[in-house]
Amino acid sequence: MSIQKIAKLAGVSVATVSRVLNNSETVKAGNRERVLAAIRESNYQPNLLARQLRTAKSSMILVMVSNIANPFCADVVKGIEEEAEKNGYRILLCNSGSDIERSKSSLGLLSGKMVDGIITMDAFSTLTDLGAMIGRTPWVQCAEYADAGDVSCVGISDTDAAEHAIRHLLQRGCRRIALINHDLSYKYAQLRERGYKTVIHRQEAGYEAIEYASDLSFSAGKAAMGKLLDADARPDGVFAVSDTLAAGAMRAIEDAGLSIPGDIAVIGFDGTELSEIVSPQLTTIAQPSREIGRRAASLLLKKIDNPDAPTERIMMDWHFIARASA
Image (cartoon, rainbow, N blue to C red; front, side, top):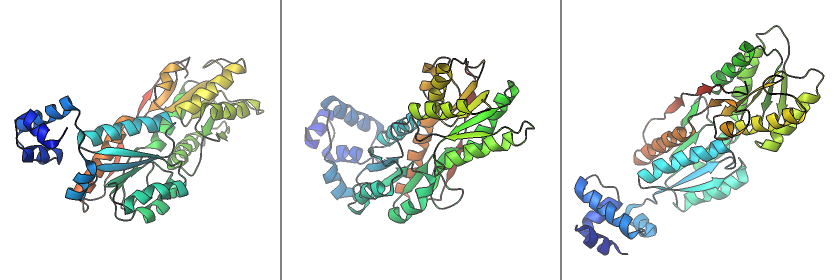
């Protein structure tokens, strides 16, 4: 299907179809809808390379995530894709694992102008290296962020959320509260641990126990919980920095013949679908993951259209979901 046939099907000029494909604001609403209807009906796919040659834009966004297997990351990517497609963009997804060499390979797309901008979810510790490679290309950092700098970012207050979780465990009578954390090269891991320690250090019990999971997986959460159960002083409450780790912890508790929350209460983080699937259902800190993705994409598109747009740092609301596990 050619652009000429789309024009004939919609009853408009070829120039009008071209303006719609290039997101021009000069097209009348009725004509735009007729063109879009014709495109949907014919399943038309524009020649992206030809458009890039005409406009010096690829209409592609590079999205670099630390771990696409993480349900939170997957939900954020869905939000990015929704906002991008609504504005005529497509995404290229790179599962970087916060590995600089893998990131360098993906960032090679910049030199060929294959993408117009970048959204990253890489570890905080890699931001300096990424910045040097990205240069002046429009860039938004998502979930992981610096406290200051010239890179726009979207996230939540991880410290406040973690403090709330620990206070909830204390209020329900827990006195030996443990933390299952992950890699401290990630800013969220640092901040959630800070929130845990801030509240714990205010207590007189003197109990503090932190286990670092090898990765953000069910099996790693189970292994970390196993170590906590083997300690001389067994916890009566556990806060895990992701729902996946919390689900693994719950399995370890049940395998040990203990009850949740009777013997050990458990709280997770992210508010993913997994928190509703496990039994008992998981108490969790819910992030607006898909909206985080949409806002990140919106910030990036603004930067692509106006490279001199000011840096924005957006902190979104989180909310606490109390369920049977705590």
